Image 1 (tube, rainbow, N blue to C red):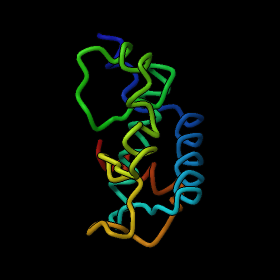
Image 2: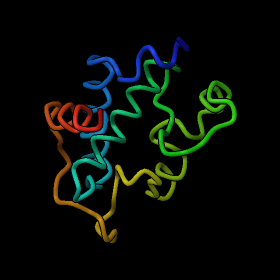
Image 3: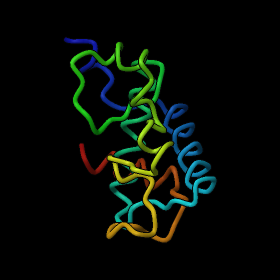
Length: 121
């Protein structure tokens, strides 16, 4: 079995850390989560998984030839440079009021994230 297949889910510790970070960052930047909670849940799960596997919350919505090199470069570590500089979130985790997909919340429960994770298998 390949090591990456052993743990396909993030640890609860990293999941909670990324959930808390996401809520605080949204509030600090005046951005909101997607109107579809499953989008927010999947992105937070991906960030937590990368935090477990790579030691940093590398953007989960991009393809990388070398994830370790990308973590070292830090450009795509959440919040990524486009988000920090222009409030452009490729993952649709942090949305401005101009987005067609913006919701009205800056919070998501750990239970919601886990429910989405379980529903996806």
